[in-house]
Length: 507
Image (cartoon, helix red, strand yellow):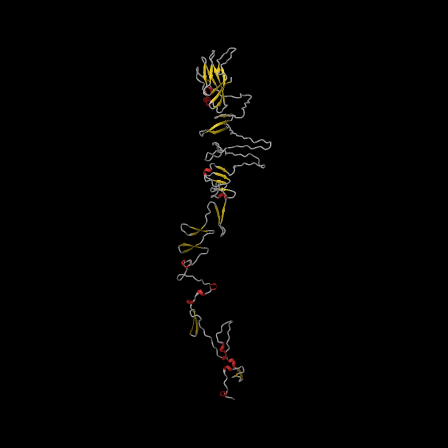
């Protein structure tokens, strides 16, 4: 048996898999061999893609394990120390620079600067609300400068209303007023219902009057159609602008850009009369007048508008329509008359012609002129003409001229006591006194000689501008059987100029 001191030395690095140790069992006394390499430790890293804690280059020394050291890559952010056999890693918060962080990933925001430390609720000055809690459904508002408060509705369908007095909004229920009905029975829904029968702002609840606010009802929203003026008068206009009070003089004013302002139509489907009728007055009240005025002329010596009434024209052999003017009937009183009025030179209206309920025509003022046609008197049971005859005029038993006033009576009588010569009035006086307004106008009159003694005749001579034609002597009366005179002469005065007349003996 060899002694251990004589054996060669086996280096640790030279141990092979064939090197064994002799092992004896103390119980069985059996001897076994133990592989020497099994006494060396085995080192591995359990993590995937991890950094090992040992130095793999030193594992060749079999039982020697060399661990790597731990140090900080940035001592301003992390420190490494040993404390009672423990490694202590300390993160330095003061060294963290958020500007170097990826904000998209970390969520840090650069440039946020809260002045001082914020503890508790974040104040308004630091960008907060100053509130620790807020009730569900509340709305934030500024109750004072730099003070935020919350307002919570107390009922369904309330709205936030600004108070101009306090300057603070508040939740409030809408007041429906007299024109609207509010329905807030459904949660989160506010329904406003309006009916025409109670819309008082634009439609009066009693009479249903529409307030146009002095504007038009038109087909396209422009200034035309039906217009109600601020004075309450109504205007119908097919174009234009807001009309002034002076242009709206009647209760209903029709103004158009064409000559036809009002048209009353007639169609085959509807044949009837088209009437304009005034409203019947209440009991005890006279009926109101109905007046139609043509337009008054503007300045610059312009002519006033004519008022023309045209009946409808017939077609083919049909007759044209008649123009009828009918006065009003009466139940028990006198029926009305048709009156034709004109203005005189003084600007006063005069009743010129009247047709009364007996159909009598009275020319109250002015003259009746028939210029181109004769006057036909065809009454068969009454006199053709009845004219007024006043008391006859009497000329004195002397040389006093026959005045126009004497001649105007139609009969001039004289009782001469001898032969008398009498001149007529001047032509100018006869023209004006007898109303001979145009050349050719004439007037007839008679002279009666009441004398019965022979030689007591009246001889007429012409005044200034008077031309005599025929025998101008009126003999005295002679009642003998062979008398040649009955004491009457008939004369006609004809105007030939403004200051000239011709007087004829016609009987």
